[in-house]
Length: 448
Image 1 (cartoon, rainbow, N blue to C red):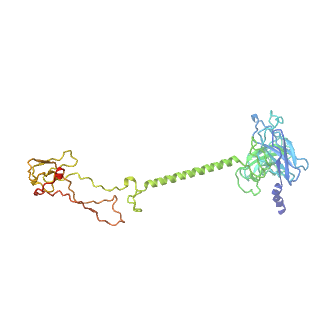
Image 2: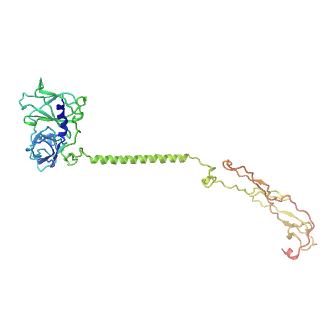
Image 3: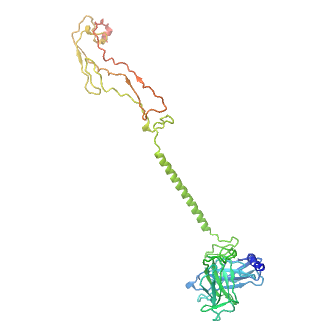
């Protein structure tokens, strides 16, 4: 048992022992050079399989599957690529240890060459014989019958089949030559259970004694099934690095694949993703800043105005309409009434009445003005003296002025007694007294 498992364990090591590279750019009708590097087991060979639709008008297919064998122990080979421009193919390199031991390339695009005279565009090529599947699909770990019609005489020898996975691991389909079965309406064939993972693209290539490709090829995608036949060595599309080195994968020649990296690098997608991420991050930051500013604005609008300013005790920071102003006592609006005289209300256009009184010097008091005294002491005055009285001064009374605060007294301030303002008496109730006339004034006084 151990002797049977040992070769299987060494198979991955042998597969990874060497690889190949395209030494020239694949161009229509030009020579394509391939070199092998590493410790393989010559002789080497390369199998070229066209994939995809034909780029020629009316879908004319001029491509054929072919295998080119290296000369002797040579590690390089060159052959003419008879494929039209913009078509694609997959290359598989093998040595004496088995099929696909040198690796499988990805989809290679053929660029424009110097001419297009190496193929005939008038007719389409067809395989020598064909094979069929029942059911016409491949399912993971589910048996599929592969059969062909041996009665037509088109098959030479016993057919064989290869499973080619672009950019992955290719393999040979085991054919039980001593256990082929014949089924009515199906011909001769055998059952095969593909141990290939779900979603893997597989190109099934049929061949006979004339070489691989004589039975044509078909593309399949492995359907979902059970995992009973899978193992760590089960092939898949991403099991290994695409072989072939650098080669064009698009019609413009861009998007080359490098076997050292093991994957295709799409610079445009990476740059686009980075720019999109940066723009999204900036948009989120701007949105967050907007909501923060909006929240602060609403909080500032809801904050009440403190009219007391109990914290700092100062009114300097109050708005203009909330600043207190001192109370100013208004001017008196009415004049008091003097005994024996007529008075008028303040602001009236009526002039005060004139009190005409006839008097003698003997009736004058010492407080009367000097102009009313005669220059001759004994002379009596027969004429009447007319005097116009000024309005009596306003009558004032003691007033207590109390200034109230807008929002009430401060809780911290101690209660204060109201300030009392005392004003002098108005002397409105003092009447003039009759006194003997004073001595006559001198000449200077009379002149005045």
